[in-house]
Amino acid sequence: MRILLTNDDGIFAPGLTVLEAIARQFSDDIWIVAPAEEQSGAGHSLTLSRPVRLRQHDERRFSVSGTPTDAVMMGLREVMPAAPDLILSGVNRGANLGDDVTYSGTVSAAIEGALAGIRSIALSQVYASEGMGDAVPFGAAEAWGAKAIAPLLDLPLPPRTLVNVNFPALPADQVQGIRVVRQGFHDYSRGTVVEGVDPRGYRYFWFGLDGIEHTPGHATDLEAIQDGFVAVTPLQLDLTHDASLAALAARYT
Image 1 (cartoon, rainbow, N blue to C red):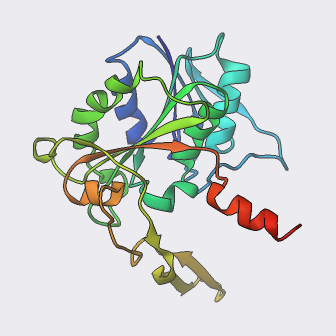
Image 2: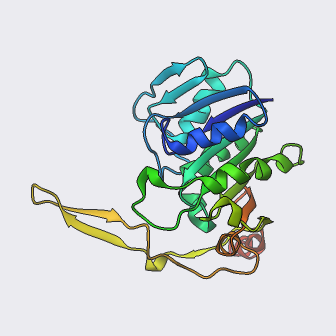
């Protein structure tokens, strides 16, 4: 089995090392194509206004000067000798839960794989407190990563479907198990913007990562993580709201 690894935290991110160790439990045919620098929050963006540069670090390890989507596209079109059987994105430093998936470069890399018809899985490690940098513990992902991936390898999935996996902020031996759940929703009206002044006296703004309220619903990814479970969520790329089609069409008749 040929596996492509990518992420949004960058080619030297600790989570990518964790992901490689997980992937090698399934195959030795591992290829890595990841952004040269952190691209958190890049979403499903493409680099269109400047060239994307490709750098080779060793035989099967490459970085690109662009987004996670760029990395997957370069991996599939320029780097790999043949299409992979599986794309794994992560392990992200931080949660990708609820509607945060719309911002996530980690999830978007898996989206690009799904669009190409390749089985794709995004993996993220939740952590308990901000400001940890590279000190985020990946123990839950290390211990539970292969357990979360293995059942997905031969599972029939509809076209343009990917799987989003989040590991709770717990030591591995305290994880309660794996729970398959739907996507939850946050209340972004309470998000924070942090204002400051740089050394030259100019104001700047930094989007805060805390202060976003959420109310876990029954059997959502938010609730699963809160209860100490690995959250596994299938995501589809068809964003059409079918229930609104008839009412909207009636407005144009």
